Image 1 (cartoon, protein in one colour):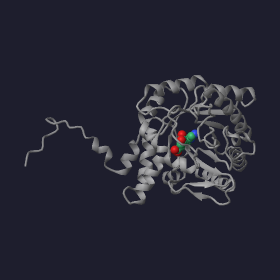
Image 2 (image 1 turned 180 degrees about the vertical axis):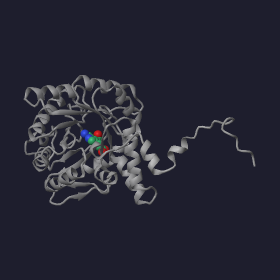
Image 3 (image 1 turned 90 degrees about the horizontal axis):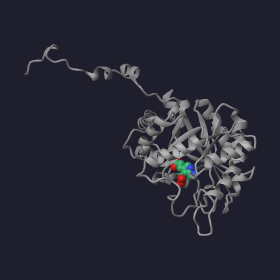
Image 4 (image 1 turned 180 degrees about the horizontal axis):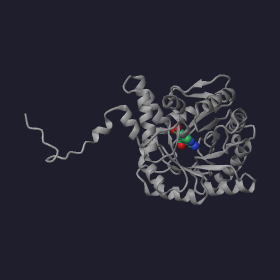
Length: 331
Ligand code: PBG
């Protein structure tokens, strides 16, 4: 056996010392996810009498307004940060009329959540038309079938005012139309909703991982959203999108999806003067749950590792379908 060198000849640095016990590892952990960092997206469907399971998102449901009330109370008790409701209307049309009906499903749900939990959670309804249109696009269409950016802004402004009146704290502007943050900000201010904030889906990529979400909202979309959502190979345009949204008055900027775009999360954190969020989306959730169902990965550990990585990359706020489970694990 070779002789062990003495320390004067071999001043070895031993990083493993700080990994030896769980207590040491806990003491030196640089990143901690807290339940209050987490925002739970949820689905509510008009006309349902019982919550309905979503087959590609085991553990996630399409809710009734009543079951959302219970979920909101549970979320407040779990100490998470907020809720992000998405509405699924019974009737859809070309301009998404249900989005601007004060009794439409998302407006009603927003009011119900607010009634149930007061200011205990941040309520962030989705500000986008795709759930409400019969063609499934995030905006209104021109005759040739392309999405009309500026006509869509007018609809977003109206929808934003309705959601503000229903009691939203922040609006999740997810449509990726140019100018949407500035346009909606001005409309909110003109109608006296100066305290309603905007969470800008600033860098939202056209992603294959949205698949399960489209089941969750009974999406009518044929084709794709590649003319408005960002293209995966590009990072520079994400920086432009983030800067534009900040200039236009975004209160929070978000990157979406999360794990495949952690470089963008990091870049956003480095340049943004406003808080940065990331959306751990449906397909990211489904991958964990499906692999865990097969016994291929440890679900709890995979959830915590995913959320920790997203936070380590620079997102202080994480939208995730795992919010309640994660909050329980973190306690
Ligand atoms: C559309 C919207 C999408 C998601 C949130 N808002 C999907 C899409 O762009 O098709 C996806 C969320 C998820 O996958 O969890 N306004």
